[in-house]
Structures are given as C-alpha cells and as structure tokens.
Image 1 (cartoon, helix red, strand yellow):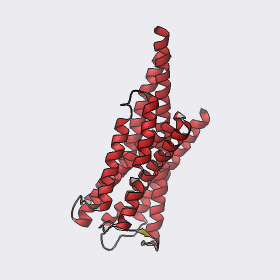
Image 2 (image 1 turned 90 degrees about the horizontal axis):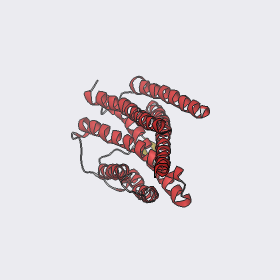
Image 3 (image 1 turned 120 degrees about the vertical axis):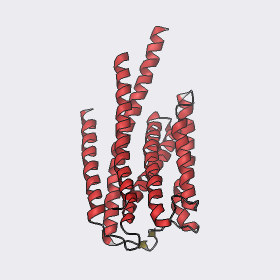
Image 4 (image 1 turned 45 degrees about the horizontal axis):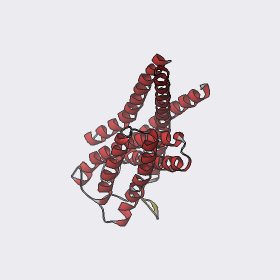
Length: 229
Length: 38
C-alpha cells in the first residue's frame, strides 16, 4: 500500500515537472512558425493530447481483449478507466483544434475526413462512458463494454490514416519521409508527448483506484444486504 | 499573444487538473461510504 502511494507521488511530481518543462519549451524554446505565427504553438500540446487520447483508447482495446480472454474484472477496470481519461484528452484535442482552425483555416469546424472521424470517435466514447452502469448485471456490462471498446477502437487507425487516404486540409506532419519540422520544434513536440503521457499514467492510476474502491463498496453493500435478510 | 493560443493553453492546463480533482472527489465520496459501512 505504502509502495503504491510512493509510486503515485513520484509519478505526480514527475508529470508536473515535465509538464512545466514542456510548457516552457512551447513558449521560449520552439521557434515562431513563419506562416501561421504564434498560434501554431497550439500544435505541440494539441498533437500530444491526441496521442494520449489514442493511447488511452488502445489501452481500452487491450483491456477489452484481456477481459474477454480471462473474465478477470481487473481488465475491465483498466479498460473503463483508460476510456474515461482518453475521452477527456480527445475532447481537449477537439476543442483546441477548433481554436487553432479558426485563425488557420478561417473556420472553427469543417466536415473534412479527419474531423468527421474525430467527431464520430468522440461520440462513440462518450456513449461508452455513459452506457457503463446502465446494464444491470456487472458481468454482462463488462462483456458488452469489452466488445464495444474493441469495436470503437477502429476509429483510431481510421483517424490516423484519414489524412493519408483522403484529400483533406488537415496538415500531415509525420510521413514516410520523416517529420516536416525544425529540430527545435521536434524536441518540443517529444517533450510535450512525454509530459502528457506521464500525466495520463498518473490520472489512470488514480482512476483505477477509484474503480477498485467502488467495487469494494459494492461488495460491502452485498454483504450488508445478505446479513440483514 | 493571440487569444486563441492563450485560451488553448488554459484548456491544456486546466482540463487534466480538473479530471484529477474530479477523480479525487469521487474517491473521497466512495471512501466515506465504505467507512460508514465498515
């Protein structure tokens, strides 16, 4: 227990430190982009946030496969917790993408392939989080959520390949030829991704602990009901 | 500094913090209920 809270404390301190370093790099280390100017600085945390959102949904996918293979509720807890954290990050990506699109494209939103897939993805995972708890049997809920989490994951590779397969106004920064960025921009992007990944793990651990406490409470209530009847 | 950039970075800083507080508050509530039952 003490070791667990030590790991949590280290992770929180480390994620806050790297987050502050990334923030400093975004504003004081990364050069000003020639075409878009200052507003291009949204790019670093926007991409990092999308990466964490996708990674969160991948963990939900893995959790779903793990649950279906073993029927161990730990996998279900991992999948649910990661979906909630991932959804918050994808929501942040969508909102900040809109804030960047307005000065860059002249509009907050356009129904181009990447944005359309992102909107569908967001709705699918909002439904996933909202539907949890609406199925009466915990076992059926976990099974349903596992299948849903696996199916919804298809939006992640679709979103990644959307800007490669279809004509879109979304910029393609990472391609087979490398990254179309200045070295200082690449450093800032990688530190931002590291910061958001650390924050994701810190949040995920807290979210898993919450779900475990809820399970413990449910077990106590069952025990209480059995004792009184 | 452009207003869009400022608003975006406020969102980037506040949202993870908000989620952390929300998780902590929900956990405190569950733990109070556990303590009441035990």
